[in-house]
Image (cartoon, rainbow, N blue to C red; front, side):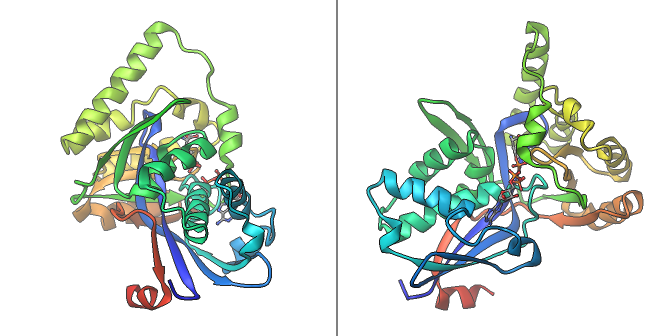
Length: 308
Ligand SMILES: Nc1ncnc2c1ncn2[C@@H]1O[C@H](COP(=O)(O)OP(=O)(O)O)[C@@H](O)[C@H]1O
Ligand SMILES: N[C@@H](CCOP(=O)(O)O)C(=O)O
């Protein structure tokens, strides 16, 4: 590894409707850390949004890295670095910015401490840190992931047959912290509600695995686990859903904890559907996101310049 190296982690969407805390997909926006040896730890945000984040040991990246390093018997104090943080993943919008930071921090320690962690180990550490696996798994593996994270174990299926779909994202200007958006969730379900909610989720999984996008789109819109409670926080969800359907989308869901909505669409129709949604929500950023098949990567700067 050269003196200067880079960690690149994709953004993620999660839930896809009823896959609450258990389905995630990497998308083509990225967090990039450029790491150089230095006299002390310093995190430099390279965009106006990232400039507002802490630059020292109270930065999320350092906090996660330090916790893992201690658990592995590595002292980060002995290996100070300057970390330039660049990203086009908006913060607190439901596109997994914090999960990408957690995955990047784990990779930082993996490289500095020469831990040689496997993907499975990174997934387990990241899921324990985040409390659920959906975003972190997508950022580690790339593609679509379906899994189960429990205290004793984290299990995962990874799918990368996603060529003919794209996603039209409507990214509002306002932030919604995941912690706030989880506070409104329903704590209890009757047996009947649980059976119906899990039947919709199971059918979504089967449809995703068999690339039945029409059925997957239908199931995406029938979530009973979280979207109803959250729609009060994201008033444009129903409006976007209706307009996207009319324009030819398979289905629309709240990305992660919101407030971004994602409409799953045929690749060929993406531009037209994006234009239709821009008419409906002119103040939001409307953009096309593609599934990203490559998970987190590390490269030295020579390789990084070839990627650009
Ligand atoms: N690259 C980063 N470096 C440091 N902290 C980050 C970074 N990305 C995200 N965060 C922290 O995570 C918060 C957003 O996390 P969260 O509410 O889970 O939303 P989301 O993950 O959907 O973007 C930010 O406000 C910030 O505190
Ligand atoms: N399953 C979680 C996903 C949170 O994703 P984020 O991108 O909003 O952090 C949830 O729905 O709370």
